[in-house]
Image (cartoon, rainbow, N blue to C red; front, side, top):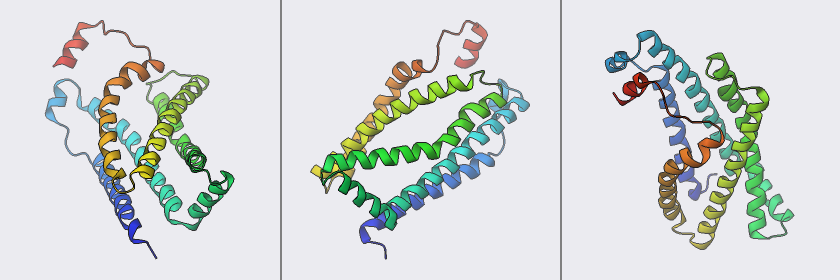
Length: 216
């Protein structure tokens, strides 16, 4: 029997899966190439670009669906409830310690689920297509740096979300949605300036033909 309060979550999860499958279908069946693209690239280059992105998008959709299954099992199965009770017991009934332990467990499982995807799309595919010369050790260093950034941001977001739910149980979802939207806007400006330089070395484009093509 499904609780009435769980129905919106199930509807949201089902909707997310449906959107992901539609996204995958259009990625695998993109239709005709826009003629404007052929002003700058050959049809062969355009088709190769499609093939490259189809690999990445297919892997992303399968990862997303796997994560949805994991969260559904965690939310609606007896195993998820047993885990929550075990964490609360280990924390001695202390609310924030329970939140921290539960978050850490979920974050670690999510990283394990995503690790094969990250290795495949971030290392194997990039080398197969000639877009990367990075060594495995260098990739691992970047992966660990990215994981550390992800852990900090995810922990801050989770703490804020649970604080909202704890202090405003009726309207936390609306406040969280509004503030999350603001964060996405701020992040779009901060990420290329603060985070991207940790993984890449940027320098101005010296070829005026490339600059003109991008501007066009």
